[in-house]
Image (cartoon, rainbow over all chains, first blue to last red; front, side, top):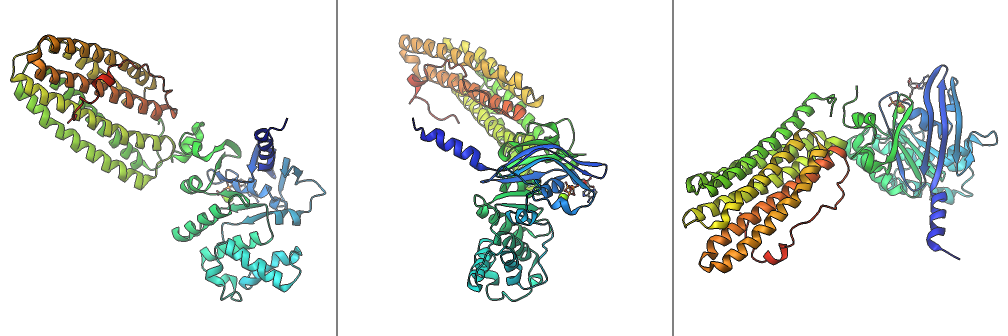
Length: 266
Length: 240
Ligand SMILES: Nc1ncnc2c1ncn2[C@@H]1O[C@H](COP(=O)(O)OP(=O)(O)OP(=O)(O)O)[C@@H](O)[C@H]1O
Ligand SMILES: [Mg+2]
């Protein structure tokens, strides 16, 4: 017999998990930076990683699109999947993976090229546009989605580096969006921005939620509380607590989490 | 709350906030006892002191609220700190209300001192002590972060409700037998009702203390004893 509730539940439950990590360990030489971490990242949510400096947030985030491959001393074990597909499989095309799982860094890092070229570069090398008109369209929609279009539409040929810090960061988000990613990783995207520029990025994250799975590393507790639905607390390479953001910031289960988010750490 | 904050002045803010609540609670308890004492001893001067004494609680509540708003603005508290600050805000408001009830009892004690004593009033001090004790204990539970003590206070509210119900019936009988005493009897009835309301507020504080300490809501199956509530409804005037 057809049971719509059950059917939807199943679809939701399997469909909503975008990435899974199982027993992931990361070593830099002898340094054990991530210890047996397992986590699910949902497609329709913003997931925040919090924790003291050096606890491994960036390290773990970089595992999610294999950015650690570029670090010679780094060794990753365990299992990471994107839509059920093992991303550390030899068959996996890393360039393709990084298009599907985009990244925005702490310091805005636009290419020293025009605003237009900053966005067009990715779609061009991934062959996403068949004509100049299509490429124009991608550039425009990406900038619109990143909330930057109105500010730059008349100066697309200006250098990306001539923008303000907040605009540069939104440019980098537009650049990530341009290649149609499924997941966007952000490593402290607001740490170099003033409160207004920060608010714009947070507003943008809220806008993008649902369209992309978003994982954000932040040192700002209030920011994590504001933008995310799930929060993961890391400490010395361990995933100490992972759960609904509403719980973590009002009633954390672990003493370590509580001490950290209430400012009692160390 | 064993460890301290990296920013030490945050700890000072939280200590100050708890101190406001303790002071308010101490005053409220004394106000209840004083009002009952003034009633029992038929002492209008004492009753007037209680009436004016309520201002101190109102004043403290204002200061506590100002301090709490400042703390939220400056510290943006989270987790148990957040619960702590919100709990204090709610408890301060409840203690302020308890103060109002005590003041109302004192006002009625003044009126009762002007007329000849009526018999049912002798049961009131007993109920008053029960309620003042609840207030004291729930504030001890707050001060010592004792969720279990909060729970026992919470369960004691049933006794207060029972007390009120039997006092209500006694007064009704008394009024029927002594129609010329309706006015003083009504005062006594409202005094009992005020005490019953104080019990309810102490119970609410107990729930807040429980949430503050454990982060969990107390399950809402409190035994309800006051079935006279509806029969009294409509006769309830101000509490102030
Ligand atoms: N390339 C590297 N080589 C060696 N050790 C590294 C390397 N990158 C990071 N580490 C070490 O791994 C641990 C985790 O670093 P990571 O950068 O992931 O921390 P983090 O939580 O992102 O800190 P922060 O909040 O300061 O950015 C740290 O002890 C760090 O020193
Ligand atoms: Mg980092």
